Length: 132
Image 1 (cartoon, rainbow, N blue to C red):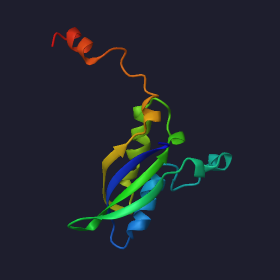
Image 2 (cartoon, rainbow, N blue to C red):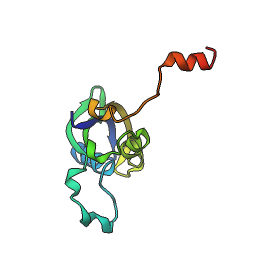
Image 3 (cartoon, rainbow, N blue to C red):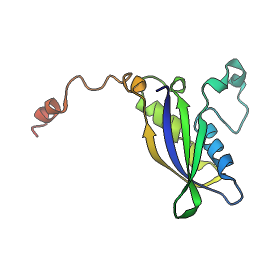
């Protein structure tokens, strides 16, 4: 209830263990970076970092596995789908330790969903406006 949960299908580069690739996905898609940032010392990044909490092989695929990553809600701007997806899938797909990466599933807790204002009316009003 306090984290956004993501399931990634991961194909690491040869020689990269699944645990290392899963941890890299969690870090790179949350607070991790390849360079030193002067603002890193201003706050505790542990509170915001993604955590790879489970890894399982993909049946029938010897080089692929599913990495389950939990992202604390504090990492995201309330009511912003753009911020959420940019954080989770924005930069990590170009990560060099991975041959391939695909977001398979995403679970968003009710507490975060409630931060979205949504439309002021239902689908029927929209259809009526469009004469559909």
